[in-house]
Each structure stands twice: as C-alpha cells, then as structure tokens.
Length: 114
Image 1: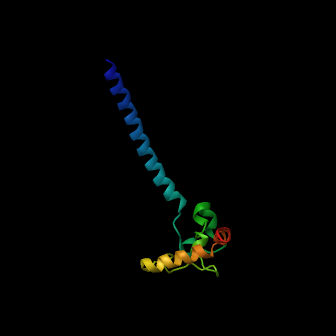
Image 2: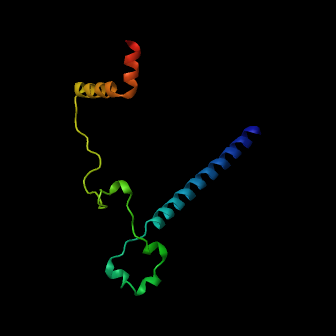
Image 3: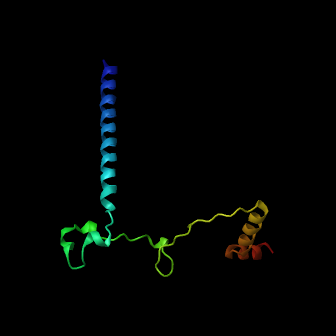
C-alpha cells in the first residue's frame, strides 16, 4: 500500500513539474517577443507630429545597443569583437613570464629572496 502512495505522489509531482516547465517556456517566449518590438520604417510611422499617438510606448522606443558594441564616436562596431590568433607554446610562455616578472608582487618577492 505504501508503494502505491509513493508512486501516486511522485507521479503527481512529475505532472506538476512538466506543467510548470511548459508554462515557463510559454511565458519566456511571450516575454522575449514583447521586449523587442518590431522596428518600423520612417514611412510606417508617419510624420513626426502626426500619428504617433496611435502606437504604444513599446513600439515607439528605439533600440539602444549595448555600450560595448559602440566605438568611441558612438557608431555600431561592424567588425568581429573577438579576434584570436594562433600562438605557439614558447611565445605564450615567454609572454606569461614577462607579465609575471613585471608584476608588482614579484618585485617584493625578489627583494625578500636576496
């Protein structure tokens, strides 16, 4: 009898978990669609003083990019943000040794060793 009670309890919990998962996925998709309004062209919006009252606040907001995607003059950067070059192990070891030798903590360590 106790085994049936456990099976019933865990089955109920499983159904609640799956229902919660589905509800969260649906709500996430609605939130994602509502946070990024469709961008209208200048012709669709009408004149500056004209039909702007017909649109909600979310459709009138303009897209503001993240500051890291802008250059010094405020224009959007179009080139890749991460450029990786290949380097061999010896060059990497020399670069790391040079960084270690020039670190402020290293100068204090070398004076204590002498």
